[in-house]
Length: 288
Ligand SMILES: NC(=O)c1ccc[n+]([C@@H]2O[C@H](COP(=O)([O-])OP(=O)(O)OC[C@H]3O[C@@H](n4cnc5c(N)ncnc54)[C@H](O)[C@@H]3O)[C@@H](O)[C@H]2O)c1
Image (cartoon, rainbow, N blue to C red):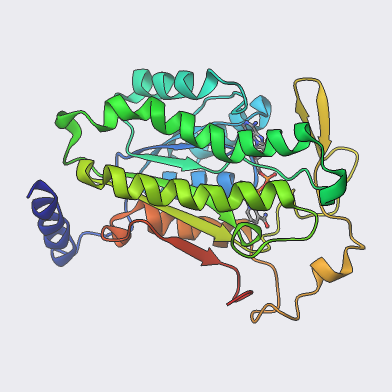
């Protein structure tokens, strides 16, 4: 019943000409938001009125993104930390609750690839990709549960946005670990939608195709992810001709991080108040 009442209120606000793209006062956590899609989403959501918690492994870049948002007149705070760390997800949720007293939206975006052919893939390489794309989102959800299941926030808008990939939906050469994890996050999303709809929580995923960011640009010596002393090179070589061929993308080009971020705004805002348990494909039409 309360859900129905909330929908009526939201519809009423829309009919009153209140902008349904606004997320004024919403507290939004975005993991991996120092650069790429997460950074674009942080800037866009802050422009739309959100208070944004910017998590990233890269502390300096996370601070820079938060600073940039504040310069633009928005509200943002950096919460640097490694999402692979078992205890960090709970610390992040606690830190944001201490800072702003509530959390409306969690965007599980932090990620990277660590590719290898199936026969050469070792357990450590498989494991780290499961940890970042599946364990970290699960641990964040679990840490959020006391807050989101509390009857006092029943009518507050609450949602989760998980980042998947066309590799998860369709498979991809050399990405047995990443494709498995990105398929897993879709199952996680649908389970949250099924289990937490009663708490007025929406859960959706976005499967991106080729978005032009650090992980898809050609690798360089500086494009390295440092994880507990291990250095993981990121980027897709310029000579990966098959991968860079856009002939099967109807829009004939990769997407930009800003275009990718707009799907997150859709899923975080009242524009999608009756959308839950789905996976939106943002691919320029690839794999339709
Ligand atoms: N770019 C694409 O074509 C594409 C396609 C499909 C899915 N994705 C997914 O989109 C998400 C964002 O990637 P992007 O393209 O913006 O890449 P990106 O490299 O530009 O940004 C990813 C950010 O995540 C951070 N990060 C990585 N590991 C972390 C950790 N352990 N803890 C905290 N932060 C961490 C990185 O420091 C980086 O700032 C990822 O989940 C990625 O798998 C990207």
